[in-house]
Amino acid sequence: MLVRRNAWLFAFGLVHGVLLFSGDILGAYGLVGIGFTLLLLQRGHRVYRVPLVYLAFAAMTVVVLAVVVAAWLVSDPAGPSAIPTSDSPSMAAGGFTAAIAARLTEWPLTVLSMLPFVLFVWVGAWAARQRVLEELQDHRRLLRWGAATGLGVAVAGGLPMGLLAGGFLQVDAETGPAVKLLYEASGFFGGIGYLCLFGLLALALTRSRRKNVVVGALAALGQRSLSGYLFQTLAWTVLASPFLLSLGPGSASPTFTAAIAAVAVWLSTVVAAYAMQRRAYRGPAETVLRRLTYGRRDR
Image (cartoon, rainbow, N blue to C red; front, side, top):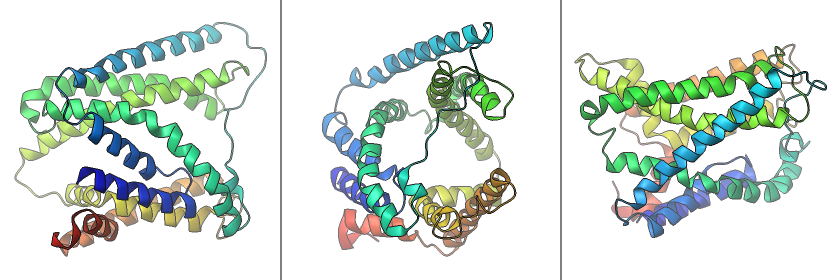
């Protein structure tokens, strides 16, 4: 059943990645899910300790990168360098057909580049076997430590990138990639930090008997995350594509326009998910995936 579900998730990613967004995550989720199910699901406890070694390696990577960046800060740079970024051909394509042609080669490369995040899934599997989020009361100390450490590392590691993006910091061409890599490497710890923070928040909310509409709406979106994810792609395709509305280049402040659009699109998914929750409707993408996975017996 798990293999079938992840195979269909990969199919979702294929359609999504080729037709709409080459940065699709579903294809990688599907392949990692299949591999994890076949190779790791039924293994013993020792196998699930492997990601803890990976966490230690990732921490050393962040430390080394931080030392490189700090060493530059106390030296005299040879010249300023912008953030090393590049636009994908599909996003800059002038027509829908040209964008699809570009995504036919972009999407497979994206999936391959994301496969190493099986280690992230492994960390999550270890936490699940320890019942960290199921037994919050028994893991409060771990959650507090994880939230403080994870978010602290993420903020410290992302600060140089933020300063560079805001124009408050200049680095030379050799240091620019290290700044970006530090931001990316420390971001994984931020994911752990948020996970622990939400666990603590859930623990606090379970002690309250009052119903919270905001929490209910966010939970509803979480239960319909696949539909929300695909809707955001559709929205951004319409809003940002050069051959459709193309809001960014035509606005006085592209950054401000992007921020407003992002908040509006996300809020629309929250409202829609809450409306579905009140009507006991699972969500279109979830309904299709469950039918394909379980067959007509699913209700």
